Image (cartoon, rainbow, N blue to C red; front, side):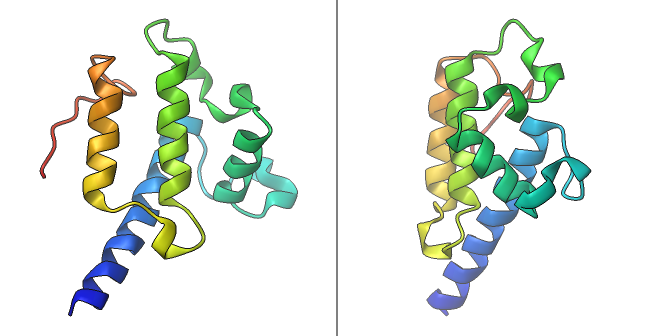
Length: 119
């Protein structure tokens, strides 16, 4: 049914957002650095809301001179939207695809990965 498909897609979006956070931060879900924040998602949300971008972005990515900070912020924002607590607040796959395509129009790559839309 449609409801089951929607729930499944929103769960997939959470997983995608989680992987995106891990790629951007260079951290895993069990990293000791999260402290009181309990999870990588809560830690990422805290760092983003307090503008601690230096903590958010993996130093390996930050050292890449071709990485545009605005593109990183857009990608971080997408990761946080995908990991919204409320499933209905998460974007659908088509919205994620369009956002990534938009980011890529200003750059040849995001995180060194080429992107081709399956949608």
